[in-house]
Length: 224
Length: 240
Image (cartoon, rainbow over all chains, first blue to last red):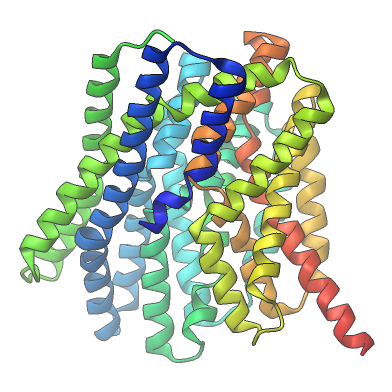
């Protein structure tokens, strides 16, 4: 139920705006209210369903590899999971929908989601390796964001916008619980870090990957 | 607001199938082909998957019917308002979004624990809210002055990197996580349509990317305020 709370500011502002400025006719605002009910109910159902059905399976697979000390298969699983979770992230869908709506054919929605997914997959592996090898997070974040800054200076405006917007949303309600479960699993097996410290930084690293890959993809496309 | 309800619904249904099939296929492959073992509590798993898919569908349809068009409509109204009022609104909206986000509260709780209480939950949530509020204000200013996104993000991340070098090591991961945590469904489906609606009302359809980028800026704001907070606390400790 907690999850639905995040929508309250949007709901409050919408109702205030309707009462004060917009004054849409009732049949139109009625549709908005129905849509709002769908949004809240759908969001809660989605989170609860993923917790009940998908997360235990993903965790079970991760644990099975960790128990066998099979680090390589675990990293492969983390990489592929990062890709498919980005594809399944609702906010990624809705962000690319809005981009598509605005720019039409100038934005290739499938390729954008693919690039972001590849970025998250690669950096999920990086995040898991960081925990396994106990690297300080600076080693990943400073070069990662440093490179992103440099690339942002050379990429075109639309690419920069897409890269940073999508980078921020790939780490959403679908991806984060899985990443944390895998990260904490690795940390607990290796025993070199506290649970909590291992889970910190996973989202930050996960966000850099899509930013970098989308920027590189945009630059390559511009150059060809 | 003319909507083709049927096309919204059918597109959303397709979208959900397209989005969830790869995850289901990957998990099934590892479960049955690689590990070769049965699923524990198959009924719960199937129920959960059906719930998640139906919820996903409702969420997408709902956002397209309510949050997104209303965000655009509010943005259009804001385009005609005095800039000071718009900036005030932007700050309040951003801060409210951050305070309401459960993920921000979870992060605040965890940082409180790791820092052994030297950073109180309330203080952390406030730092994140301040960061998001400023970020939305900066996004509005970017639209009004037609600045490229890199003009905001490059100096912003440069500042974040410099602060990182001086911030106590333990606090860095949490500070960077704060950025990812603050960009939830409201940022994407309400704040973003609001800024695009405002950009279009101000500059017309061809402004292109100007209204976008707000999500990326929201991800940066809390990183800077969180780093600044941990830095200022360390200063105070070393002064004692």
